[in-house]
Image (cartoon, rainbow, N blue to C red; front, side, top):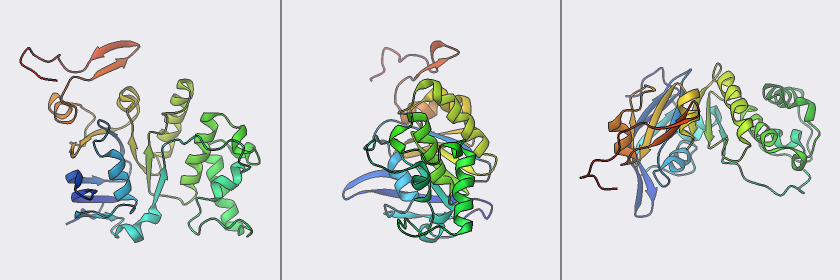
Length: 258
């Protein structure tokens, strides 16, 4: 049975494409206040898991409940920031119009927003400090500003859970810390599941860490044990902490393969 307190409940999920099984018996509960960093190798299933949570890929086995509902009904409680895509900078869409695309009733190009909808778009832009640039074309923004607008687009539906897929992969490193501080503030009002390859950022800013490589290893803890990383990566993982590279696991023994 689902824990009645969980916002998102994934039970014994198996999913994939045709004959290619990507996720194998994955279970996870996400609660209010969680900020989970999800790490794992390329092809390990991180993006597939997000697709299943969003209802874009049906499970082969298992179930997902969002706020006690199936994905189709519960999807409205989820905000999603996809991987940064370098869109056509000449496309004349404004910051304001980009954010209003996130309204649950969809994109209505020639219809005026209601007063309540206008208020929601404004509030979302305020949360990411982008309201003064509301009329700017997206193509004139920096990478960090654009990402803040995409975050606002996810926030406009007032989600209970925010899914972030490599949110800092294409922004300047100097902007990364500012975005993580924004996520920390948002986490006071919503649970966050963050997919990232940035081990330093995950270890610095999230509350707990999960490892995914077909199977999910999660102990509701920030500690990365040797067993967790070995089961997911099968090799030592290098981190940079305080500017000094170091290895979080001992090097392979002479008898190791990899």
